[in-house]
Image 1 (tube, one colour):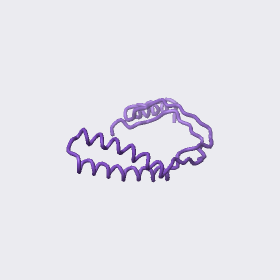
Image 2 (image 1 turned 60 degrees about the horizontal axis):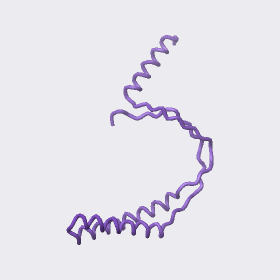
Image 3 (image 1 turned 90 degrees about the horizontal axis):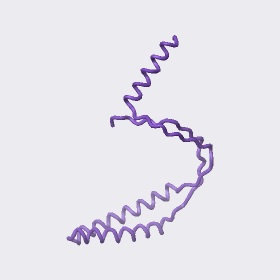
Image 4 (image 1 turned 120 degrees about the horizontal axis):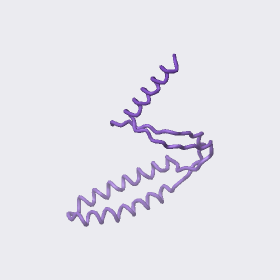
Length: 113
């Protein structure tokens, strides 16, 4: 393959990539390290608890209250209580994870979803 042919192929490939993708310069570099993150199992239990209570709160509000403003107030007030109670039941837990080497220069997002 000649240099001229390789350059033409590179230009065509670059044009196709730019036409099909949004290219974003997003540099990121981090060495392997140990990090603390939220325990996904515990967070899933918390979310399930909250979703169950939230569904019950909505069912009670829509089944017993006719005024939309009162419904909204009732839901907001009880959601905060439900969130606190579920968090007490399933407190935040962290786990230690070994994060790998992370290198990124460009992000490609398909233009037409």
